Length: 289
Image (tube, rainbow, N blue to C red; front, top):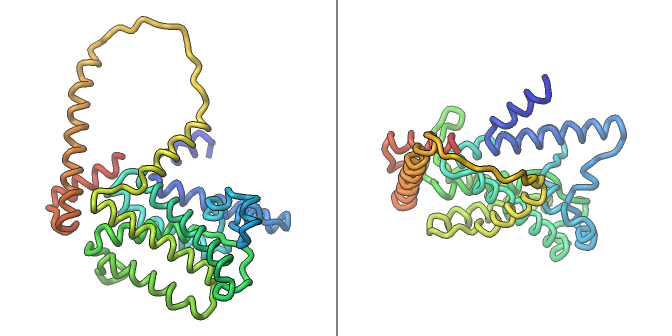
């Protein structure tokens, strides 16, 4: 397939699906490097457990989340991200999704780093560094489980409330810590879970704790955009198309007002209080973002 075709299909993916695609491509490249060159790219991008090593590669606080230990590791994470991402993006836009995901990645990484340097006896010394998207994935999942906890989803042959799923994952990590199995990683999961829970509960209270992160993300993205060349000044003539701009702006504002009203209703009475028309409208609006 031509590169143009790949770019087209990639552009049509949701932001969650794009993250999944990037993670899978990096996993394949890393595995090829291991088998063909006997080197692992993750050695340069994993989050080291030693604080002074981390200072020498601070980018690893984010890049560790793009590498995985094996096939089951990456597939399990991406499956949960797809499931949680679809629910999240039916409620909020791409930027809030990125806020929740990467803030959870960062907090999970900081918990891992802190645990190895402050609680070495608890964590042990068998893990050289942290890799995997689990903290970010757990953050997104706990966000939706906390924002619409009583919403039921189909799991195998049963309907189950979202908060049961979130509670089960958190409880699993808590129960396995005393057995000494991947303690640093499990603490990172819990850090991501905490971020997702707090972010959702704060949004329900009208406080977006990701607003500052969104500004930082926007500022960073501007650094990588090519500067537009200023051409000669041109006279601009109004045409008939400009007449439709007022109506388009009005329709956009009206749609946003309805979305805000529906989200406010969810925060007060829960997702299940919505009518079918409101649920359909919210789903359609999430697809158009």
